[in-house]
Image (cartoon, rainbow, N blue to C red; front, side, top):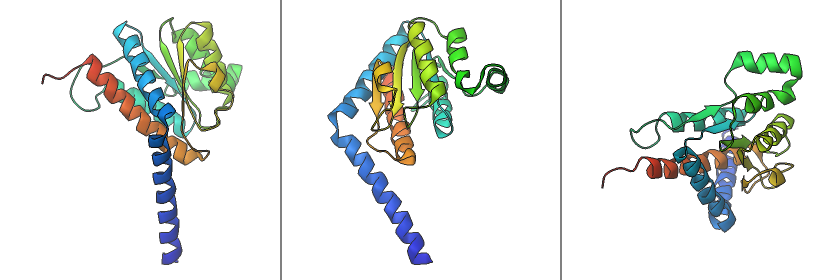
Amino acid sequence: MAGTTLSSILDYLVRSRDTLQAAIDDPGFTSAIEDIAETIGNGLVAGHKLILAGNGGSAADAQHIAGEFIGRLNYDRAPAAAIALTTDTSVLTGVGNDYGFERVFERQILGLGSAGDIFVAISTSGRSPNIIRAMDAARQKHLTVVGFTGRAGGEMSWRCDLCLHAPSDNTQLIQQIHITAAHIICGLVEERLFPQPR
């Protein structure tokens, strides 16, 4: 049993390492991070806000990322405007009950989003119906649409202004890459908006 357990642990760690290395080796991946950080920074400087959504683990990532912007990442500074659409249980259950679960993020985008805001849509498959509808609503309201997805990208890719493709088809590994990229993006935006004295 111990040998089997150790083998499973090492196998996952190796796959995790290899996925991270694939991201490091992909200039398109690092370029997407740079472009997304610049877009978010520009939007926040102009007085717009960051809006995020996802399902399951990606919902947790949306909240995690919003928390890094509102709170702090590397040092104390002013909050940056960020909202996760995954936290209001009355809205989620009310819209889900009255309109269907596929509209829980779309309705929030239509109600809370303004032209110039940035919507970060997170879906490891790129096929989540409620994320796709929210992306369409965001484009209708003239938000900038940023996607975080997996290698294939599903239906998300062509709906995005910018899209970050994690180099994997495995949900857990995609999620690991997403939160790593999000930390980098938040750090870059933090340094730009709230530079520390040298």
